[in-house]
Image (spheres, rainbow, N blue to C red):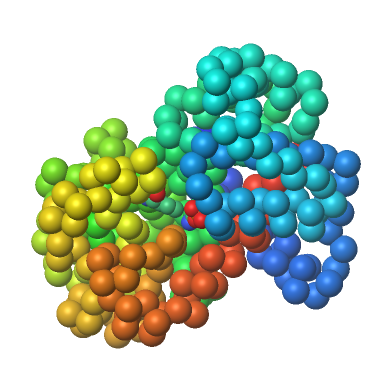
Amino acid sequence: MKHLLKLGDLSSQEIFELLELAEKLKYEQKNNIPQSYLKGKTLGMIFEKSSTRTRVSFEVGMHQLGGYPLFLSSNDLQIGRGEPVNDTARVLSRMIDGIMIRTYEQQEVEDLAKYGSIPVINGLTDYAHPCQVLADLLTIKEHKGNLDGIKICFVGDGNNMANSIIVGCIKAGMKVAIACPETNQPDSEIMKWANETGNLLVTDDILSAAKDSDVLYTDVWASMGQEDEAEERKKIFKGYQINDELMAVAKEDAMVLHCLPAHREEEITAKVFEEHADEIFDQAENRLHAQKAVLVKLLG
Ligand code: CP
Ligand code: NVA
């Protein structure tokens, strides 16, 4: 494993190894065991979109591992003024040890990896959010005891989260149902791959998708970059909501996850959110532990 660009690049074995490493790092941190695995290493973090969890978890994670995190806003970088990605990649490769990037186009992340000579980590693109799903898998494993055969139902937009959930969860042995409007399905290549495994259901029938689920998951109706479409999207996704009615068809002990930020009374009711807040904030915390595993694996 040289980069983390998308989960499709990882084998099931590599995903399981990252989860085991994350569990070990989490245990060490909780027990104040020193973790200087990345002493003297620098991670450049390029942000072309906003972030709370991704920025804080990478920054704190690097610090806990004895390394140095360098926050690089695209507002300040020459990349924001049109310097080509392949030049940026070659310059950064001469000065730092790894790059985390949050941007729009998946191609930009792939190009950074192609033209640079240091590990690149995708901190969210319009196509994928692999770091989030590693944290999600860690959280499901902690709460359910295992991943094999666990059913997850994602409700809402067939977006970056839906794409990464399909790939990551199926590779981890889970069954995935996506409840979304026909006009907003996940990436077609990903659906094709997943359909061949026999472990994916994509439907606009929310109740049948959620039936007997172990995990219900949702995300905002309008992602970053789609702010102008927010009002129209409220109409498209009306009803694609985790609420009591949906909880009633899932398994009795079903857990609820949300990558955050959440829009209460849109994709999830405030009631369900608060009833499952422990799971949702465990999930947020696990961004730190899962990403530390990625950092140790790639930069260590
Ligand atoms: N879930 C997530 O990536 O959160 P941020 O956008 O705050 O980083
Ligand atoms: N789909 C959301 C996820 C945020 C973590 C977005 O791209 O804005």
